[in-house]
Image (cartoon, rainbow, N blue to C red; front, side, top):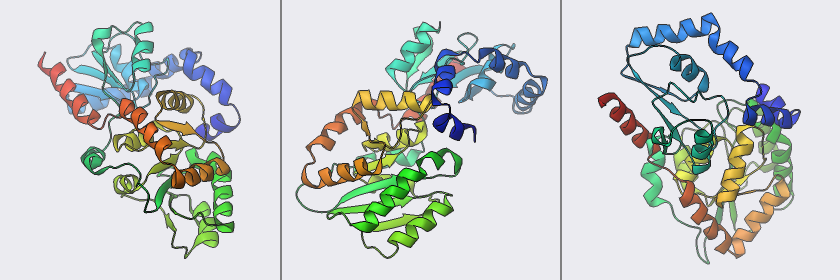
Length: 317
């Protein structure tokens, strides 16, 4: 619910807090809160790790302030970093982009403790990379994968009006030469609306929560989604350009900026723009092939392996 509110009602306020660290006092209080520290320390005591990898700033901040015998590695799972990661007491930071590394340096993290390794994704996304291919030449349908939901429904709710509009437009007039696959996750209401409008259409596939996302992304020529860090990293690992249905707020706004500025995707924001991109893809693939260069600049399919290798380095120092 907090993400829904931040993206629809208070996007500027949320983005400002995310970028500036204006909520640092509240964050510090949360990190100090006895129950939070106790729970984290209980896990450390039970596991006795040689290295702890934090993908969230809160446990990283707690552990950075205590005496420890283990290495501590922070891993950012968006393309930009917020202001709440602790600049001291951490042995290293893996970030997803050069702008993220620059921001961490400005906050006092030495360059020697920073590596641009990307966002870790499931190994399948890296394994399928060799089969990824650009859109077909003069024959064959173009393929659009539209991700409208995942395991958690709430973050996708702001997209629903746009997706419903897209479903209505496709129901009114099919787009020749384009195949569509919609993944609704746990968004049962929206999936029901899609089935009412598009069930039985040979050019449309409607899916719920799917464990086949690597294969689905590999199938697509374009991936239409919101700017969540993990989904973007998965698509880019498979060399797929992205169309972003909203700018978002906070980390999603930062992801949008980096993806668009890198040339790996486009901000479309409404159903008509999605259809126009699909229509353009049927007659001219040069623009989406140009996006592939931006994808290459951001894609890090081996991020998980490289982060694990760095963690091993820290243990052996």
